[in-house]
Length: 172
Image (tube, rainbow, N blue to C red; front, top):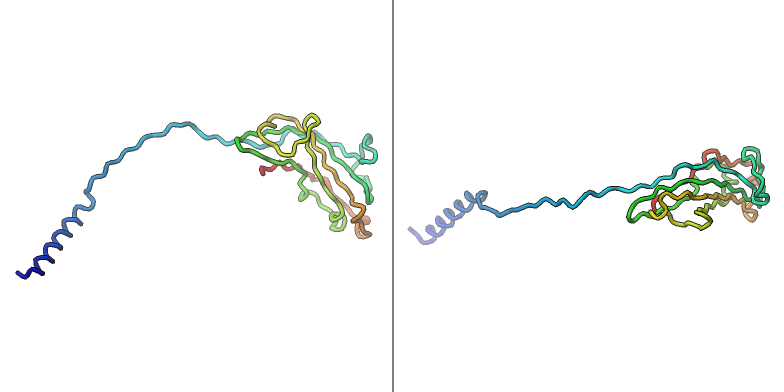
């Protein structure tokens, strides 16, 4: 037999042997169960909001009826309420602001209004809510300022529907 044929036959036999035993090679394996504990999620919630009070900044001692008050350029109105914060989580940071998307208004009047929110606890300002604020009752003031420098005649007889004003507590 020719050496080339012998070599080819030997290679073929070796290949068949290797292919046939492919699935039978043993592997050492081990596993261990890790019982390190359970990860739990935190919480971010606003509750116990008190009914708010509307006032005109120029006369803050006198509450106003927002349904009948007629705002003019330069006026500033505030809405004051309080609510309890539930905030737990190791890296939790959140903000509490008035949600402008819940207020509907005529376009001209809306463009001339500036809305700001301030949050305090026992007189100290809070800009970011963290788990350190868990259980605190905070005072919230939403200020609507009719910007006198932006006012145009287009905003006359406009309306600003504050009936659905919401506060938004949002993780940041």
